[in-house]
Amino acid sequence: MTHRTTFALDHETATRLRRLAAAWQVSQAEVVRRSVAIAEESVGGSDNAASLLQTLHTSGKGLVREKAQGYLATLRSDRQDWRRNG
Image 1: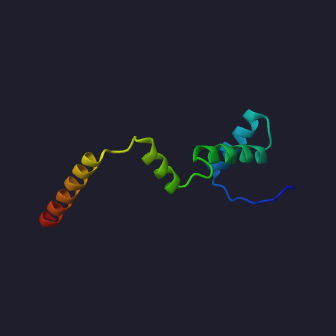
Image 2: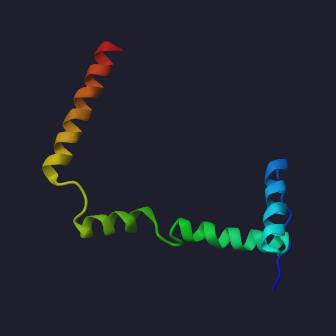
Image 3: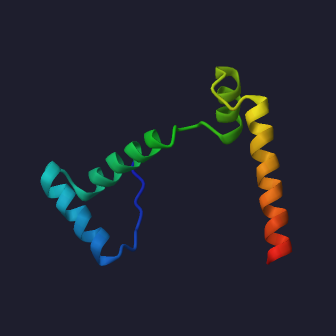
C-alpha cells in the first residue's frame, strides 16, 4: 500500500534530494525511503535508553563504583564553588 505525503523542504535539502535521486538513478520517493531506513538503523531501531543502560551495566564496561563516586564528588565540589563565586 502506498501512502502519499507532502513535504516542505528548504532549497538546499531539495537540491540534495534531486542530486541523490540522479546519482542513485531512482525516484525522489525512493531516496526518501532509503534514507529513512538508513536513519532508523543508525539510531538502533527499537532500542530505548533504559535497555541501552541495562546493556551497559550487564556488560561490565561502565564506571567502577569508586571512579563514579569520585566523579560525583568532584562535580558537587565544582558546583558549590560555582555557586559561591558566581
